[in-house]
Image 1 (cartoon, rainbow, N blue to C red):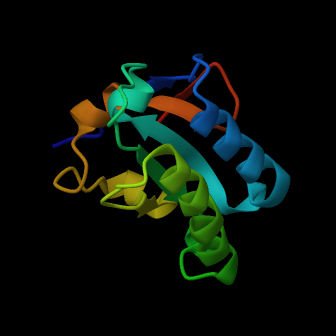
Image 2 (image 1 turned 135 degrees about the horizontal axis):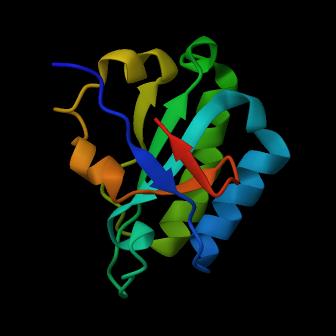
Length: 127
């Protein structure tokens, strides 16, 4: 099976949780990530009162086991738990090098195709 490129458009809606996460990343954790995505109801802007938060971190390889990533997850989960106090999972995460052999059994490409880009703040990105 050959490579499959996926174009992911920017998140353009106004969910407070997304804005808070973007600010957290941009203020303190910009060096950690290749890409940060939201998917599920947040990504499709179909948030209802019992929506959970679904997000994917594509972490630069040299930060996978870092204290900085651990700190980001702790700080971001505080925000996520305010959005959904019953949040039943954390971030989905892969490392940047996984993109060359994407683990589709972990998070299907069809989910990526419906995801929205929250970092970096660009119109779209090709993975």
